[in-house]
Image (cartoon, rainbow, N blue to C red; front, side):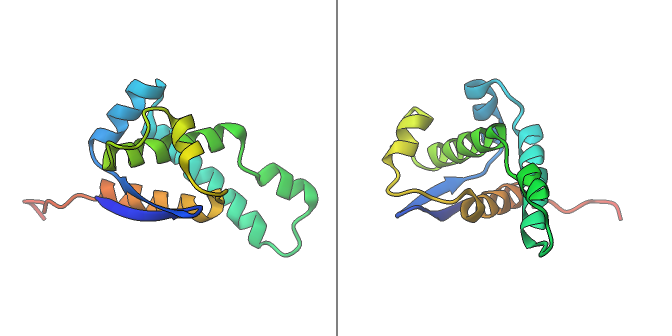
Length: 129
């Protein structure tokens, strides 16, 4: 599945396919499925606290995405962008530097998670019911 996502001042194609976990594992030595689960859980926690009107400063600080979460997000975004467009730089740092402006993880991450989940859905129908 492929989708165009707006990041900063740029529109970038991203692709979720069966190849993405393999590319991620070979490039970063980590399990994409575990990392995406962790990232989604952290994001939902942060979102729940941010929507809570009477959240304390301590709750807000504890719910912020960690450096590891941000790194996972950047790496996943790069792998999906690279899979969709071979012209994307071969290094995530170069790719991030090529994006115009600064972007919010809270705006882009939901789109990446949605693309990831859509790519996981099966198109086959079960034989037995």
